[in-house]
Length: 278
Ligand code: PAF
Image: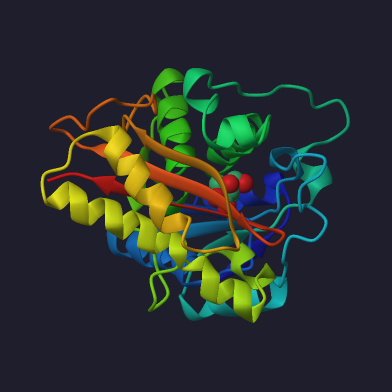
């Protein structure tokens, strides 16, 4: 496994590989990231992972400074997975003085996470575009946990005629259903117990959808009523939206819909989602 810090060195080494699979991360790796690495290894001749906590996707009052970091452990995990290349640039390498160009994907960035975190998706699209240009992969792997991020990136790839496939992999969950996330470390023991209500709300919606409920209002209410059983849950949004446009729906169409939730428990903001489809 080669660990490379500069764009120039990465480009030089990268030219030895064809059919590269790419997993972009912000480090503090967990089973969710490793599931993406496994899938990339299954499908590609070689695998590159980037570790970069991207400052431009954090708002001024968000957790950039405190975002969990453990580069030593990350590299040990990736070595064990026999990843070929790891790109670990500094912020100055990625954003040298005078770097002002950004990527604005537009409509699908406006709602949900985009409304709650202004500028977030400009930061995500810009860094992912830059990493795609540096890594030159054939396929890039993202988790369904960040559903809107996958929609934004897929749209950027289409709109800018980038020649790689975006592969979306299932959310990896703890045994009680909580989606695995680097931010789960912020939760106290009591908050961690309470956090599972997100998954319970989604499974309640799935159950009623399975029983034939197609009214979005009814399904949103079911998720709301489940979240409301947890006194620590401070609900931010409950959405039942089109899977591609992310516009809110009146009824779930035959092709299904994206149910997504955001809430705070204490100081921690948590998101989760599921696809409601037959
Ligand atoms: O999902 C993440 O970890 C980040 O948003 C990504 C895609 C690595 C861009 O910084």
